Amino acid sequence: MSVDRTACPGQPSVPPGEGMLTHSRALRFWLDPANLAARREQAGPVVPTRTGPATAFQVNDPALLRKIGTDEDTFRFWGPDPSLRDFTEDGVVGLEGAAHRKRRAVMRPAFSASRLTTLGPAAQARTRRLLAGLPADRPLDMRMEMSRLACGLLVSCVLNSELAPDTLSRIASARSTLSSGMFWRYALAPWPWVPVPRRRACRRALAELDEAVRQLLARHQPHPDGRDLVSVLEAATPENPRVVQRDVRALLIAGMETSASTLAWACYELGRHPHYQQALRDEADAAPDPSRLHADQLPLATAFVQEVTRLHGIPFLVRRTRHQTVQGGVRIPAGAVVTLPLGALRRDRDRYRDPDAFDPKRWLPHAEPPPAPTALLAYGLGPRYCPGAAAADAMLPVALATLAGSRTLRPARPNRKIGMSLELTPTPKGLTMYATPR
Ligand code: HEM
Image 1 (cartoon, rainbow, N blue to C red):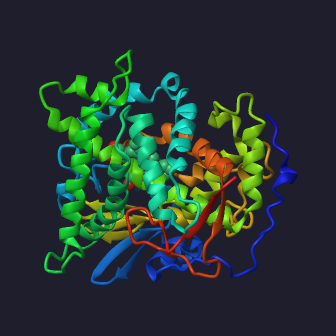
Image 2: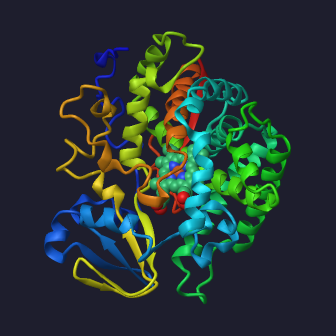
Image 3: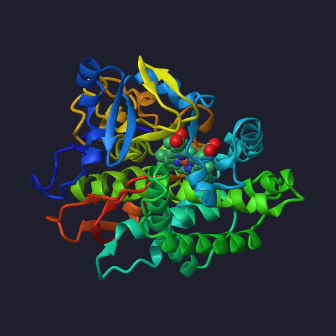
């Protein structure tokens, strides 16, 4: 289908300064494209950086970044890190090498193209149901509401189950606690004497999530072909239900975290650029069957999600060296954290025209200059490439179009500065909005 590009001229419809973002010093460092260009010239492709007691090694050369991101012999992915055992033990995220590859292969049929075709309409129906209960008369904490929506989408569309609304709300509030707990546990691991914030709250949140996973597995509705995600996991380890439980937990943590932050940042941008709300509605109304939306019928919604990822997606990936190594001429000791600054790559002037502007149109088909989606690395790279990528691509544009179609979003406190949470995936802190039914 074609999109009327004049419907979204891309002019900021809020006065300058409104809805401004505040970044912590560390995030500014990782988001700054200057680190990729100028610093590479001044300091080389790998720059040791001090953050508190830690020295992390920032990889500023895009080619080296790809090499390090895929090399699991020298660099350990965060999942199997001993500091995160409580969270990842026995699940796919905590496995390495052949065991990890085997578990990933088990999941593959559940994400095949033929299965994904049903995800759009399922995400639309689920989003509608979840939005039906949203209060219209008071400001909503969008971080929380989008966590609930992301969790509901995952549970019903990807894991073929259901959870009671109050359980969804409990997991949504557990998400932020778990995410920041994991972040600090990992970051402070080399200094066991430094207290990790909110340890007890994190244990409670994990117990909450485990209880939800038990309910989810008990209510699982297998697809008749037996190839839905939970069914393939159960068939692979019939003798060990704990492994399935841990895999589902890992999928929930990883999938909810990233999808919730994408949707929350999308709301932030819809508030700043309200003309896109109408443009998204028009696009969905023009679909062949507006009651059964598919992402490939929604180029603007897809482009909107991609632009949200470019400006607000996971700012950096982390790895830890297994042993001492030399990269880009720099000696990196064993056990050091290496950061891969995707955020800076995505604001690189050499890749994107006017990189700080929010402009979904740059991702539309036939955009000039053509977009460079590979530079986004939205779903990571190498053996840890996101297994849920295709599912997210199928669900999130539809969820966004459905949200814009049923509610009008408006910042509750337009002049309030929005912060970024220090979590696995930063989410907008302090983003409250009215969601008025249309
Ligand atoms: C917008 C949505 C999403 C984004 C941006 C995203 C991004 C990513 C990225 C960047 C990684 C690799 C991290 C690294 O290398 O350090 C990853 C891994 C992972 N993602 Fe996603 N993801 C999304 C949605 C999902 C969904 C919906 C699921 C579940 C159905 C999921 C499950 C996972 C899992 C389990 C891993 C770990 C893979 C492994 O250890 O082999 N993600 N994701």
